[in-house]
Amino acid sequence: MALLMEHQFRQLPADRQVETRPFLETVSYLPPFFDCLGSTIFAPIKADISGNIMKIKQVYDSNPGRYKTLQMILEAEKEMHGAEWPKVGATLALMWLKRGLKFIQVFLQSLVDGEKDDTNPNLIRVNINKAYDIALKRYHGWFVQQLFKAALFATPYKSDFLKALSKGRDVKEEECLEKIRKFLLNFTATVEAIYDMFSRMNADLDYKV
Image: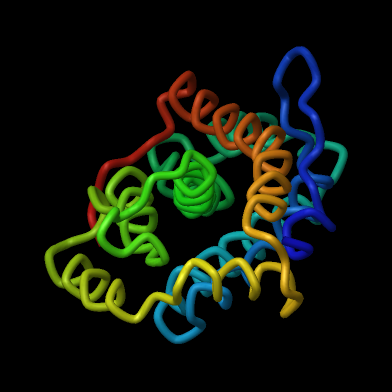
């Protein structure tokens, strides 16, 4: 749990604008989360998230004043790229990044809500499968979906996952889940604000990979 609690997301202001610099600083600590699920299994999602963070950071670093919030990035790129937008630049990177963040959010929420396979309560396949169905499945072609199905059978037990999340320390399950609940407050609000922004600006694309 230390992995998440050491780098919490900021509470959003009243206008729900997501400041770019603190967002990038915090989200950069999330890729190791996927090592807790099995580094080889989820390596492609981890690499995708890391790569998209880097692309957004490169744009932000080019002009921090102009790109103070994520919405300012989308607005500037829309003006710059015209008909090519939103399938370009940091906008495209953030579109895919938000889906990876949604996967994490739905998975963790499912865990704290107590959703489980009653016949195998120490498995986390139900939670991961729900997160994949909601956040990523519709954007993946048949082949990628089959790879994910196969990967499900190699996921760790819940007890091992929570221990990995706590950096190897033995922790009580309920104590760990309570910390996840606290982490989810600002994290969920941030993910929802980014989704709302993409919807408002008509910046989402529905193609498959």
